[in-house]
Image 1 (tube, one colour):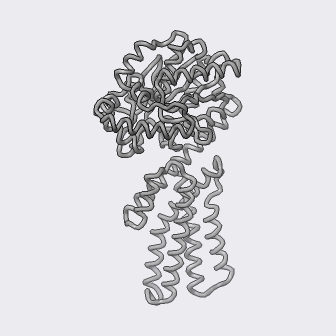
Image 2 (cartoon, helix red, strand yellow; image 1 turned 180 degrees about the horizontal axis):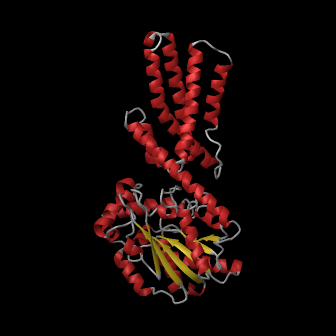
Image 3 (cartoon, helix red, strand yellow; image 1 turned 90 degrees about the vertical axis):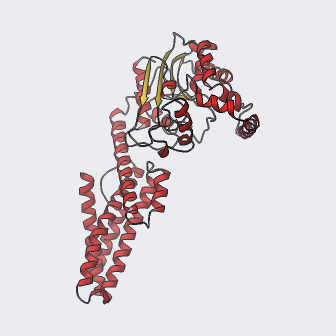
Length: 441
């Protein structure tokens, strides 16, 4: 409600300034009234509101939404003003009328571009799809209004979410609710590496550290067998224990990283150094569709893809990437054998998280494409891993969103760096780690 009140006031002020500007200009009254209307119009385009926001980015996005709302309202108000100008005085053939039309056109464009640039630059939830839609539909009547309204809605939702996070941070400042007894080891999935300037986990680690967590990373190679990746993780765990004297670690692992971690715990004796394992969208029961693809794909094609992948990742630090062995370990039959040979340890607390895509057409490529294969062979999935395959341990959390795209394999690690209207992924992880702390881990 406050948004509409604020937008209405802003619209009326800008409209009044525009009308005053039109009137004084058309009548050649270049005195203080003319310059006052110019100043008011410019001022409220620079600073649409005086409400304190969480930070400059949120303020810019919120101001952009205000200006875009004002633009939509101005379209109707200015249309009425132009019609009145056309039927008064000398009508459409007068110089005054065309001056008014020109001023209204320029004023509306200033408000629009001011708002859309702020929203595009400061808003992260708009996403690539709606940015492109805004550009393509800009000159299409009705469609442009619909897209603009949706962009405003998304920006409003983002502002509200950031404000909630700001209030939450203020309330728990100094409480260190994520300061677990043992540090957090975050383990990436297959086909990725831990890169310093492009964090695999997006904005999540920074949010956890802000609330007291100590974070380390798996840093295993991008594509190895479960056994080889597990061995690398075991060395990493031992290094953390030796370096910090922390006795144990809490592992949070995504995708294949969960299987790598289970191998290190169950087969390499790391259960004495691991307090808990939280797997995120890990294919504990494998992927039937991956098995079908590997069994039916021509050998020449598989080898060509593997060679190109292995060559590319040697350039970014992998010493011995093995694409085919990594993928082969994710087959349903391979995971069935793995589960028999790697039973859970009684010394470790196991829990898991899973999610699914709602409508693949709304999700990101290539997960929207792979979703169809996984759905055909396995069932509801996140683009790669089914909900049933992700279940493991004492506690399972089904991460859901009412957004049309749902929660994909990439969304659960904040890969796209934007939130959904009903899911703050950073806040989810804060709750997850806070829960580990409350359990004494």
